[in-house]
Image (cartoon, rainbow, N blue to C red; front, side, top):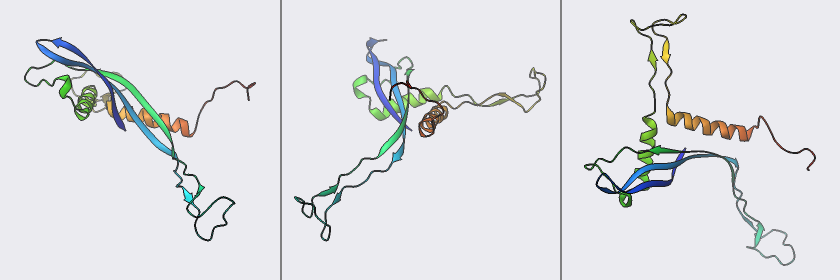
Length: 165
């Protein structure tokens, strides 16, 4: 899964600081090869040469690989700036923006919680059962991308107009 930063929103001045980044717009991207690339083939000694062709001419053109691809687009809001750790817009690298984006998404992760003694335990549940399922935001985004690619590989539905060929 690849993280792409599409753009960063910023305020020209905020809290006494200049060029304060406020929102990162991202795309998570994944692809899987559908068909492999085919290399160009040249005529060589011993080949039957069509009229107008010579050794070294292109016999078969190269064909690029084709891919299934999937994307997940979104935004993350950035925290209010801390003057001691502030990075101005002009000083942000792509790697830094990716790190900030992924870190903000990881803040949304939830750890699994199990029922413990003293909890109000619903009927049918017991101590040790899962109370709150774990949630890993980045893993779920990647699973969504995988599902999109799987749907492209083996479609479960289709659309169209049967009267148009």
